[in-house]
Every structure is written in structure tokens, then in C-alpha cells.
Length: 549
Image (cartoon, rainbow, N blue to C red):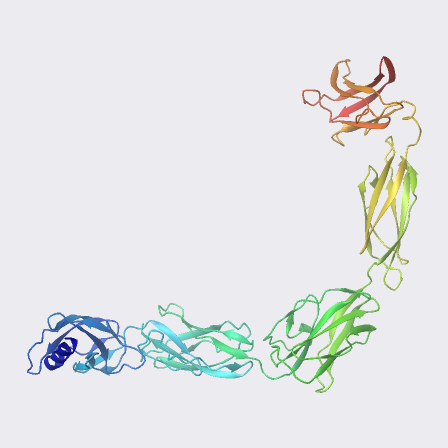
């Protein structure tokens, strides 16, 4: 059945006939066309199938839209758009049996100017296509080599707009590129020269002159490959690579950014040596070795290394001093890097500390520190910091500089009128040390049944007062605070053998508030501590405390 129907179709549908299409037309503008299916005798054949609509210039792309049409009773009539500015004909093809028909010749003119279109080396223009370029990528370029590129003024479908001399400007993703300055197109086109220096992938953008409504255009991605091996580049901590750098002054450290960090005597740090092209892009070097050199005493491990795509050395300088130089050389090709300068500082690797183990409360004592480096030499004019991290003592000197012998002396004040304690002091130079000092009571008053309060007065200087008392046997303890009129404002009760009621030294803290949590007024208050064991009183004493807010 289907074969018979197919033969019947071939026998009956003979051609497609276009009605006359007015010429010229313009790219992007729609215009009406009518196509009629004909039998061998020139009569309309009632064809209800599909056909392909194209132009006689179609190659990779179809330049007419829609490209697939469907006939109804032998007629297709609708609007079409042509995207190629050219002298051409429209063509209708029934794809199964290749029944065809062509229109009259139409002159298609470009649409209005719309965009700038850059074309890189290796690319070919494809007017009328969606992308404007044939599917061939740009050729790779070598960093530092100049090359030409083209710029076109086109309509929305990349057809050339002639008779225009628009001003254009350029930018590129390579910040070190050498670009042409502002220029003009000639008859809608122009050829310009650019030099890209930074290896990698880049795009170039063409921008119209100020006030123009033309769209800027961006190129395809261009791959820039490094050139031949030209430079050695040592990289130090604190520095980063800067490929494409156009700097030629050595003092500006071509090929890298940042400043090398200060290093320390006999403390290793890494130095990486890279092989680079003329534009300071990293390259791969085969068959050469590299070593480091300096006019100052230093050590490197290894003493030499294969260069390849970079060699890493562990380096340490043996003496302190500013502006110590270092450079790299290859062993076979004889290349020498420019001089690099480092500041080498003495690092305090040893703190020799002299301080008493025990001091009496209320006295000022002295902590002596000698700072030495890895060569056991004194460190001059270096900072050292002190801080009390446990205990109630106070550093009167929190930071000092060492003298010409690397020494310094800091003062430590032991708190007066306070219970015995161990104070821990943190001493920081480049290294950190901790020392402990035991604070002894100036008398045995606590052991004799007295009450101590510290600080006294309190409030303006500290938010609470520490109340200390010493119990011979553990007892039930009641503590009361009385105001100047004899009224109790705060009380505590501690059962025997619990904190506050144990044999030995006991402490509690009062924040200057009454039992309702309100601040008491300024004035002199009395703390009373009473200890009872069965029916006997084991401890009873009072002490005055001043509150000053």
C-alpha cells in the first residue's frame, strides 16, 4: 500500500512554484512569500505534507526562517526572514522524493548597524550565521609576539556594514597586553595589531566611541602559550608570580609581586626557582640544573637541583643583617637571575630568665631576661612582653626592648594584704616562656584568726572583694555583712567540710550587693565570720570593708 502511495505521489507532485518576491529585501525584516505545489500539467496539486525551505547560498547554515514548512491543500503562505545579505534565490525541497522549486532572484541588503565584531587569526567570518564565525578556533599565539586581528561593523546577523568609519577602542583580559590606541574603521572594517604577554586564555573586546549606540564585541578565546626559556626567577615567601610583567627595572622585581618576608637566622625557608620566557611566564626546561648563590653566609638543600618546571630549595642564612643578597644560576646554559635582597633578623630562640621563686606580698621584685639567637648571640633592641596570666600580681613593665647585651629587667608587684598564692607570668619574645612566683603573706595574721579583705576599698577599682579567713578545725560558718547602722545586708551559711567551711584557708567574694541583689550605698561595712562546732564557737572575728562606687 505505502509503495503504491509513494509512486502515486511522485507521479502527481511535480514541482513547487514561488510567486514573484519583491526585491530588494533587508536582513531581519520579514516579508510574505507564497509557494504552490504543482502537478505535471501545471495545475495545483493538493499536497498536505512538509518541505524544507532554504536559500541557494546555504552551506553550513540555513539563512532563511522558518526552514521547515507544511503545505495545506497545495499552498504554503507566510512571512519569512533571511539572515544573509546577498543576491540569492529561495528554494523549496520535498526531502523524500527531492521535488524542488526556486524563487526569483532577490537582493538582500544588510540590516541596520548593530555590533562590532572582532575576528582573531585562524578564524573566518560567516555572515548570516548565528555566531558570525565558521567553526574553526583561533590559532594559538606566543607570549610577546605581535599579531593582527580584524574588526567589522555588522548588523544583527554579522553582515558587513559598509560606508561607515566608526571610532573604536580596545581592552583585553591580559592586563599587560600592548593594545592599539583609539582608531577608526575604514568602510566598516579594520585591521589592528596587539601583543599579548601573559600565557593563558584571553578575550579581546572592541568598544565603540563615546555616544555610539553600536554594541561592543568580544572575541573568541585566544590561547597564549609561553615563549622559549629566557629567565630564571627565584620566588621567596611573601612574593607571588606575575606572569606577563612588562617591568624591566630590576629593583621592581620583574616577574613577581609583593615583598619578601623577613627571615630569621638559621631558620629554614623555601625558595622556588622557575624557568620563564621573555615575558616571565613559566616554561618547562629540560636538561639543565640550577643552584643558589649569595655574598653572605647561607646554606641550601639541595645544593643544586634539576630545573624542569621549577626547583625548590630549603635555605637558611647564618647571620643577621639587612639586604642580604641571593641569586640563581644554571649550570649548563649559564643563565643568571637578577639579585634578590632579604632582611635576616635574629630570632629569640633562647630566653635566659632570672627571677625569685618566692616573694613577700606587697613587695616589688625584678625579672631579668637575656635574649639569645640560634648562634647564642645576644639580640639587641628586640621587644619582650610580660603578662600575669594567673594570680593577683601586676607587671609594672608590660613591654621592654633589650639593651646592647640582649638584656632587660621588668618589675613585678606582689599584691599586698592578700592570701598566699602562686602567680604565673608569661614572657614573650619570639619564643614564649612561663615562670611561677609564689606570693607569701607578709605576716601570719590569717593563721592567727584575722580576716583579710582585698581590695579594700573596692567598687571603683574592682567589682568584688575577696574575703579570706583561716579555720583550724572545720566548722559550720556563718558570714554576715553589716551596714554602718548595724543592719545585716548580706549573709552566707557554709556547712562543715564544704567550701567556705573547711580546715585551712577559705575565701568568698562579695559583689557589694545586698540579699535582694541591689547595690549597697557608699560607706564602711563590717564583715563578721562566726564558726561553730556543736555548741562551741571555733572562730569569731570582724573586719571593716569600704565600698566606694
